[in-house]
Length: 149
Image (cartoon, rainbow, N blue to C red; front, side, top):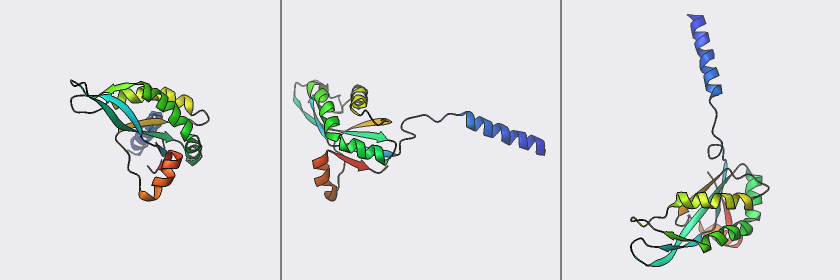
């Protein structure tokens, strides 16, 4: 009985060690929010145009990476804004953007803009993120803020 239990536990531990942890969002420890982008939209079925706020979050490994990304945030914002300003996005019937497609378009652009630090993941959200009044002035000046996960 002891041998069967011992080999069973050994097999369980070997199996658990063989399962790999996916890289990316699961290992991201820190998150940075870039200031809001206004993107051009066209409502579906109607030829109305307008602007919709879009927020971009970047997942990073550690606080050194956060400091670096917030230091070059104006350059990252400018690079992303050049792409977003040229595009016009369509809203669906529920007045939502296809943020998954936008994320796929923005990922290589952001990855090239941030050269010294590895980006683990990017989250694109329709709307504005919540910023407290104490952070608002610094956030407006730097264009970047640390978001605890």
